Length: 432
Image (tube, rainbow, N blue to C red; front, side, top):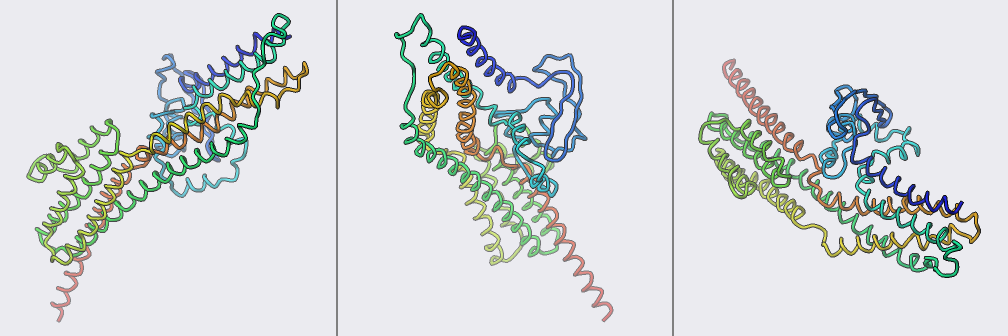
């Protein structure tokens, strides 16, 4: 029995870690059926393909019921769960009423949560770390229970066991390091989200006040249109600065759609696109566009205060984007956690062993236990890393689209309201 287990333990541990790798490197299948459950709803997507595993035919997901752009919709579309950098664009969550209903769904229970582990991008990110911990635990069990007691080495080889006291004393320090790092990362995400909320709010204020105070003339209308475009370009330029290089083509395309391919206005904004600092150039152009609106100076100063607040929010976003959590803190936490987890199986060994022959089989439980503890502790550290740079998981495109839509609605409504009041006033004078 000992000989068989000596051969089986490393094989099982290696098979387990290889299965983890295959799960996040390959699609679930390239022919057959994918069943995915999210909240109260479930969906079955069938497709067939003769393509290799890394080139799966994209199934139709138009009627799956998942929120467009969500991780579940991407899973249904691609036939596998995106993870790592490729998953971040699917984490730009915006909730609607139905999403909140599903979020509060009481049908989500422990079974649903455990099943969700197989779709967790965080867990898939930890494949290499969990593989190391699993192999360390398996090697420890193999050494202590099957090699050391063997008749060939009896009395010559020591068992590898550590006292649990050092881990009990150091675990609060490790917990504090992880908690502080996670709180700092969440604080960065919250600050970035609040900054964008202020940018959207102040952009609406600028358009609202300018549209209301501007005279109903051709000059006033044109100046409001220019200001509206300049404010949108300011938000879109900031988004481009905070995005990955893949946003460059979309940025040029959207600017070309908003600004016609002729006239001095297009030339000015083309210069902004080609400038070395697009955000600051767009902020300067928005200031010029506001100055061109024919309103009195007192009102212009009040409106300009909103531009000042937008400039402050831009500085906050740039601070977050260019300054990570101090690397010395991140590295020390990572080293502490890695060494702590590598040595932990040796400290847990005596808990699973009582020195009897039957304990050789009981010690096998040490392997999955160490893996599960590693998943959750390394997962906390991975959560902090994923939240540390918040902009790639914020729906900044939606923010910019909302600014553009709100600006058009506000300017159009105020202009129409003023025109209606003028018509009523003229008709009243005629009747008098």
